[in-house]
Length: 108
Image (cartoon, rainbow, N blue to C red; front, side):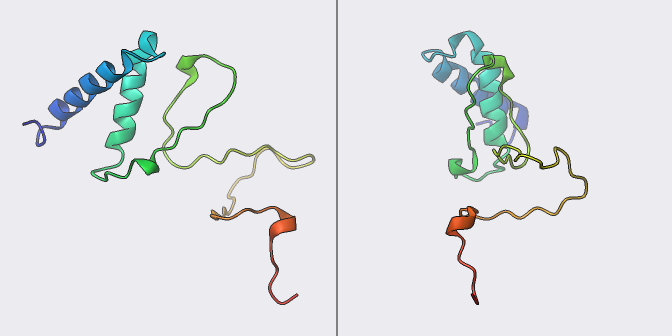
């Protein structure tokens, strides 16, 4: 039982991930992706809800371009005439579409 030993637990998770990835298309990069997978699972800090781990797929690049980001990624393109960098920004996270044609404005 390695549940109380952090290093041992991580090692067991890495072995499981490597075994799982051995039969996939990632077989040549299985060590790299095993590390990513284990790091992602350990960041859940005991939660069993794997929906907290999301994968964003982007066309192009190499497998080694994949990385685990701490925090939240917003997959949006910068609009025409919009600044590319904003400092001290206030950010709204909403679980609804922000398309202007779909927003109902109350009181109008």
